[in-house]
Image (cartoon, rainbow, N blue to C red):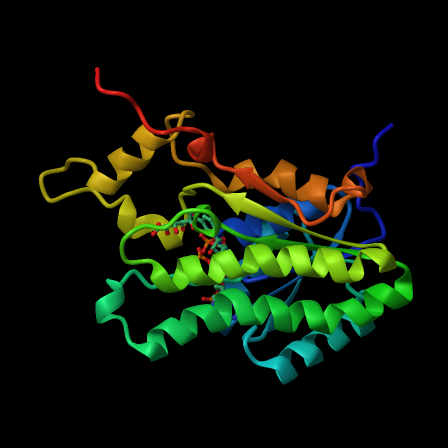
Length: 264
Ligand code: NAP
Ligand code: GCO
């Protein structure tokens, strides 16, 4: 029987206080993994621990900014001491800044790239030595439609997520010999706090134009939910995907396959 179980594995999901990261961590826990997660605020940490507990998940939470290499190394060491070295890393933490490129400051651009691309490098670098020592591991990078496509106002985010696709392929190339598998998950448009501005009801009660645009661009004719990512995450975290490496698994309802609804 194909092995989708994660019993005995330690998983670190970054930025998993809520949103996509929380759903992925929940899925990995349901498959048997011990869960560690981080965020930047005590309030989010406390709320997340209560939310995990309400689902019967004994998660370990850490206040850690993923751009702070020393703090990341300390968190990874604490996880190893407390529940075991990281077997599964999900680089999920991320931000977006929606600003027309000619109006975006270099500082804003660097902030997005720092969190969405440099941080996955930092956290992956922190866990790889122990994965090598243990005989292997799984790294899953949360990419995006913007790993493949551009659109107005997301130049920094698309640059970072495009880079994250190639970081995924490079880790897969460089560490495959150590039985480390690195793949990406590319969510489509998912209903989380990050995309809430794109779904806000208009003053007249109508749907946000972008909301209608995305539904028309998606063959599944709906926004995704964080739970839509649970199965793909378990697949990429488990032995079931041991010969899958350097692959970006798009979970987008078909957006990338579809030119868009033709005129009636
Ligand atoms: P979200 O609701 O905004 O959650 C982002 C998470 O990242 C939060 O837990 C946040 O925690 C954490 N975070 C941000 N910067 C951090 C930092 N420097 N250090 C530590 N934690 C940090 O976003 P989401 O929609 O769940 O997205 C999660 C991931 O999926 C992101 O990488 C995003 O780019 C990607 N994605 C989202 C969609 C979508 O449609 N929603 C689609 C494709 C890809 P705190 O702010 O509490 O620290
Ligand atoms: C945006 C959205 C997207 C999604 C996601 C799509 O402003 O276009 O936030 O970037 O978050 O990355 O896959």
